[in-house]
Image: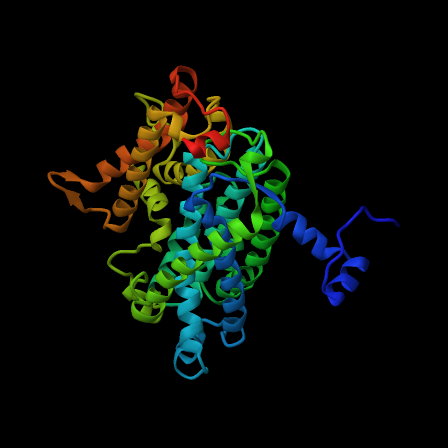
Length: 424
């Protein structure tokens, strides 16, 4: 079967391989001469950084799995053995443990960039949806990974989170029993979570492949939010952006290494260094930091929803919290259809930029609320009140503010081209 025209490579080995299987031609097309907007800023580094962190997590996870024992009687001790007896085990574990946090940092910044510059808008809707799917898979993988050390917070976190599914009408109890593999969080639960935690990163990798494929079909968005019109608007991906991504990645790795070597336990919870004990409940059960805003939304719903002036309950507080938490992710999937403003970039939408930055502040504040005990106060008011207000703004931003801005915000004049915006 004849192939299309291709350029010959100077290296005879590369040329021999490429003439029979044109992988180097494909790589050069997609990552060499691929036309890329010339006005990228450093926010665009975090896609490559997230890819690096995914590979780091997979490689370190495979090594850890060689020494881990998925048994409730030995899991905690096997982690301690990795730390003390396996050559370089402490380093691999700290790379993996802190890597989860830095993976989420990279993805959170990557998602913020997408929202700020309108990278979810037509024709990149599917690209955005695949990104949200990756985020959901990451959350599931991280949750199951947090259970594996089988410390106090691992055990009780698994108990609390899996019990949430019991709020689902009709099938909730069956889902919980399926997750547990029995009638409580025990050995079958740990085995299931270990198997799924090992498998899920490869599923993430597959979806990332689709995500990158969709990116190369539609092309990248850019800070101006306008499409390239001429060759003046673009640069080849290599060497310009390979060098820029490499620099950004090195800076990110330096910060990552500072945590791995000098503060490896800073992002963890001290209760998880105590073996799991089903008979002793921790004073304050709290998930990892990257779950805290969603955990705050879960706890914000403390009231039943029913028919007024009757005792009939339609949605219990527990189910309401679960729906609120999962609904916050569903809103991200619907974002391309909630914000239909013709201007993409927040640079040219001052009202949108203001509300979005306030959204980020509220999201971070929800993380603080989620980290505090349920009965904590802030001044004279319970902290749960602020959690409810933050949740209301989160939902209001998507369901009220964005549709209103789509119809009423005029925005500023866009530059005629990317080249003009760079010179400006």
